[in-house]
Image 1 (tube, rainbow, N blue to C red):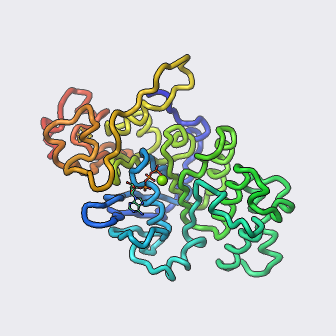
Image 2 (cartoon, helix red, strand yellow):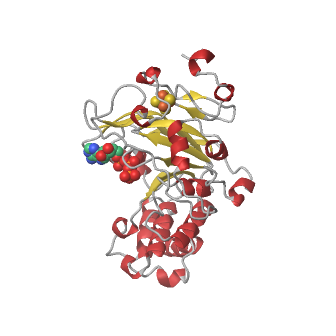
Image 3 (cartoon, rainbow, N blue to C red):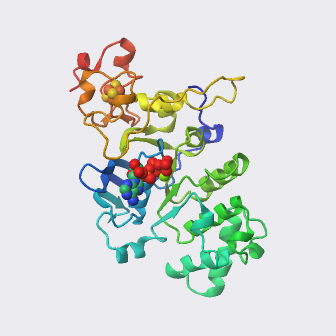
Length: 349
Ligand SMILES: Nc1ncnc2c1ncn2[C@@H]1O[C@H](COP(=O)(O)OP(=O)(O)OP(=O)(O)O)[C@@H](O)[C@H]1O
Ligand code: SF4
Ligand SMILES: [Mg+2]
């Protein structure tokens, strides 16, 4: 489990966080009765802060991102609350969303090749966002587009701005998508696995750039990779089967995970220092598909610590003064757990 440690620059960086930009409470995305793909997402994000949302495939990460960007399919119903800088995002019409997207919230997708317009130069795509959101004057927009491309590490930006997406490498296209996402100076950037398709070296460069270039925004960074979480996050939200099972500051979650699912995710990260570490531990079983989710704790079928009480659903409860919370009747790494007491003996309901 010691495989994941906070990157030294992250640990040493001064707090860059400001006011709360995003406040999400009990957000749900449903495709019908018993089909709640997002089943209670609660998180906050402050300006300058990167909140990583992590979990296995099918846990509801992408649908959460789409809900926060107004891009869900029409078959989805959203309930709960998500307030972005004073604006309620739940229940907005597509017309109302158009006024927000780009200027207040923007999204970075995994696959720049399909997200970018193949028929327009990348510079024109950046300028388009600026034109919609108030940068007046063509020359000013052009100059700003080159500035943005330079800031995300595109060399010869004035020349590259005239390129079409297919003329650029995968890493360059991903940088262009970050530039487009930042062109309207949004308060919130939602990035869904933005570096998963890149090779390890380019991934590290793009992560560093993303962190550097989003200091004025709050970032929701979606990934299934705990190693990436350690590189980029200030805080972590762990999702399982549609709901938050643990959240807290990065170092607390990595060093003292409270939920058995978080502990299992951390244990499955390869340790780069271990010689021939042998087979990676994986979590036996699978995330229950939509429509097959039983009552009680959603992790019950896979949890080595499950007991009778786990037939009731545990609430997301505060655990540390630092802000860690977990949804488990028998959380690990608590004073009670270390004394060998159980939640029942503690008097937890
Ligand atoms: N349009 C849809 N209609 C019905 N169910 C859907 C739809 N989109 C997604 N789902 C289901 O919702 C659940 C969550 O999907 P989501 O794409 O948010 O997962 P994810 O955590 O992003 O996974 P991954 O890591 O594979 O990207 C899955 O069970 C998925 O099958
Ligand atoms: S509530 Fe029970 S089943 Fe769920 S994670 Fe905790 S110990 Fe495991
Ligand atoms: Mg996804």
